[in-house]
Image (cartoon, rainbow, N blue to C red; front, top):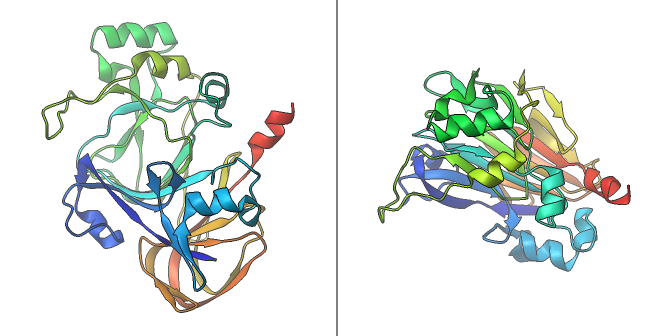
Length: 306
């Protein structure tokens, strides 16, 4: 078992709501608090009563403890995100593109659980322009909003975004986000926003269109306490946790506190924090907290053997 120390990231579209989720109090435009990440550039510190290290280092040194194989990264990134503005229109790489073009084991699918709904009550997702050529033509005409649909969302909704789907969070959203650890985003449109140095962020239209799958549709469900969600890439459970927890998954699972607090061993885990539990490990908990438990599925291994 490890406790995870969250990492704060400021963005052009962030605000201060994530101060309540262990975001850095000195930061005023927090877009993400990474409550679990072990990738290069966003590597959370993890600790228990015996050691303190980083997730990336621990996985590299002893992958089997986490249920992983040599050379594999921890396959999930989990964050709390808060948007004061609409996020860029974007597409993430598919499994096929990731393997063939990026030499990575998988692409990037993700899911959003809405703690607070967006101000307008919808997010952007799905391609409404039709085939890829129609999307490209609309983009050339700068008809950015003509290519992407509106998906209504409410608090306690869970929205699953498969890799290859065009999407964007909208202003007002505050979410728990789970994503695969291929941390690559191809931007189609970013509202021509400029950073503090007066520079616009780069777009990746060619790469985005190469990954666009117009056949994909959003999967949405209510995800109030007591709910579960299962996909090829990961499983989620939303529950009030107390007493004990045993990880029955083959890869280390992640308990993230949405509300309340838990104590494990001598450590207290507050809202926005996470506990990393090894396969077959049982931990004893004091207190009670609303949590989301996430577990990855190693489906990519079977694909590698095909």
